Image (tube, rainbow over all chains, first blue to last red; front, side, top):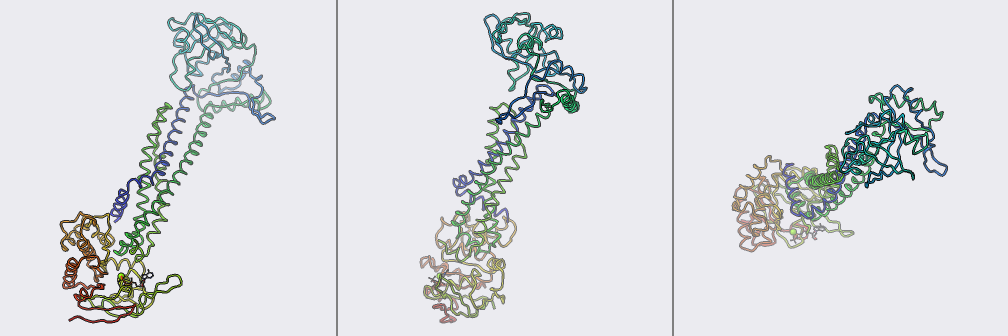
Length: 403
Length: 227
Ligand SMILES: Nc1ncnc2c1ncn2[C@@H]1O[C@H](COP(=O)(O)OP(=O)(O)OP(=O)(O)O)[C@@H](O)[C@H]1O
Ligand SMILES: [Mg+2]
């Protein structure tokens, strides 16, 4: 009998296709939006996560603390904290740290013959290669000797190499760095490998020089803006955070002067933020599902009125209340369910479109599809109950004489 | 006794006005009878038929069907009685306009708990063949004539083999010739043993029944058996 009633419900929906479609529109949009938003959220999250892990693994960042200014503004605390000597001390006192390097960079114009390029110049020590898992493809990287002697040598990112030396092999060539109104002459000793695409594409266009050169010859300061350290394993990274915090608190005397962030924490924060964001947006999309439900209720009420006579006939032929109730609820469910299916299609297409533009993999999870679809059904059920009850309670004699 | 009607009253409350559609009606009908109820417009014929058809309940008095007091049963049981024991034929035909006539005739089987769609349609087809519409199964009500519609309605009324067939002006919307054909069907059904109660305001048609109950202003005026 359920099949028979289901068949009747689908029939009555197909009789007025345009009207059924318009009534389903709210559900279609709601389900589509939920699926698209959740998919875009997790796609973007996967993208960011993979980019962060691409940077290297088990990284720990040590940076100046954040302090609230008197006017309520947020500002970094003094950067006159971190020196190269402190990096050495950290290395010695924190056994879980495999290696550590200063964070140091500036921006300058590189000139090679007639070509020039404005870019970021990063001051590095040799461990940069292991920390970021990033090695030269040609020539060599900055060595301990370069660093100790503050030699004017330079390693080019692969993109930068083609910008400055489109035809010749850059290794051994001379480049001029114009920074802070001064010219410095460097010898190119290496070209980095290509690291692949991603939001960090500009890494291909960076130049690397010894940290000591940047500090002594350009900045004329002994302070660096922070450190990036690496632990041997994920477990070590956790321990290292504690060790660094312990050591720095003792060394600087004030824990609010610095921040220690592990990559893991960063990933967690990002996934939390994107999670919350997609939940919020999904919730908003959910509201449109509710509104869609009201559309369905509206059309169901119209349908009940239009079919008053039919209800009378059915009751005269022996339909019980529950038969009429089931018929109309199934109709409402069929509408929301079918709308949900169309919505899944549209949502999937939308997510695929955005994923293509954003360049991340299309992830449509079963959970989001199932959740959106069952919510649509629930909405159909909820908003179908009132019209269906109204129909089932009609007095047969009155319904039969309805014109 | 199939039907016992005792001091039946039905009053409609229209705001402050009371309409007494049935004032005091009493009669009995045995199995196998063919009764015509006749009376002027507004005399309470349809009101009476609705109560006999278990679509409505009396304000006072009682209506017993096969000895069971109908005012004492639940709404669900009433629906079951309508489904199993009563076949209703209306002046307006009252077919479902969007369904085929085969589907229309099968509706009481759906609510009667006959299992299997194929079985339901087989039974409906047989019933339509009996009223001479075996070749129109997949037509819709809008595609057939009034007389044919009424035959579909009769097939539908009979599909669950009811104890009682009620017809409220079954020929009211038909021309004389078609009306006669429908009456022939009713007479044939009565011969086969069906109990039939039919409302009409046409004396000539009433005389084709075997008993005529005359009603006026909600009261039984005359109750006579035709020889
Ligand atoms: N639902 C109702 N509400 C109020 N009054 C009603 C209702 N149904 C019927 N009546 C009144 O009850 C009286 C009897 O009506 P009923 O329909 O039984 O007459 P009838 O004999 O079938 O007439 P007709 O031959 O025109 O069909 C009429 O006065 C009618 O106005
Ligand atoms: Mg009437």
